[in-house]
Length: 189
Image (cartoon, rainbow, N blue to C red; front, side, top):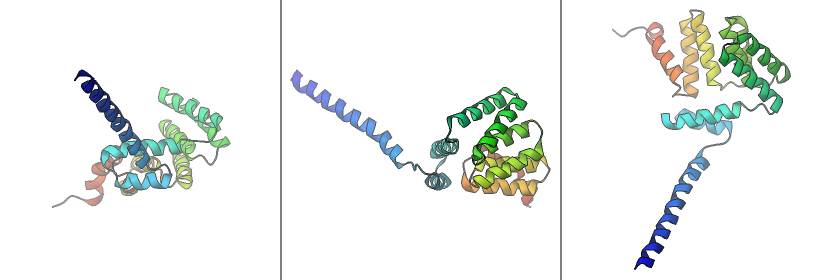
């Protein structure tokens, strides 16, 4: 009888492990690996799935294809996080000089310029980012923030709506739209 139960325990344990390890593999297999698939999935995802899709897109867009360029990006972003905007701009300028087709480099330098209060160069870099990657909802969101900075709520709202169409669960975009809605669309009577 004891041998029967120990055999049963082994079968239950093996079955449990099989189920446990196969479920995450099925979930991973269902997530698209290409940009178009990720963007389509993101546009219709529920909020919890949108987090993983956003991470996958950021990882995909963050690949420069060069270890040296990745290092420049890391140094620039780290400097920006430390509040050293001048060093960040220098690293990110080197990145955009050496990898002019890498959209994320332009986006990060736009963030550094914005932080430094250099709005003209920030807008120019956001435009370049969107030329290279028109689906970069973070760049579109940043452009909306620039329009807000310039006291242009109509264009800011339109930029946020464009970004929301790509990523409907982006918290910053949702908050910005809520904040500007009554100002742009007017108040209901």
